[in-house]
Length: 60
Image (cartoon, rainbow, N blue to C red; front, side, top):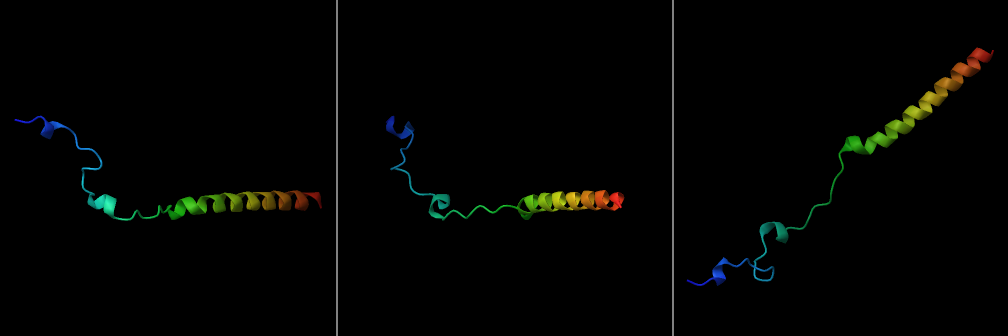
């Protein structure tokens, strides 16, 4: 019995699997992650607008 069959295969000896043959798809971010910075900026602008409105209306 030969001991060569028990050795691990090298990369050049192995055939390409289906996952290697398929082109990789581009990574897509969830929509909620994309809108998170927009929601934070909108919240900060609204908070400053409400604070300014409150300050200016109290001054009169």
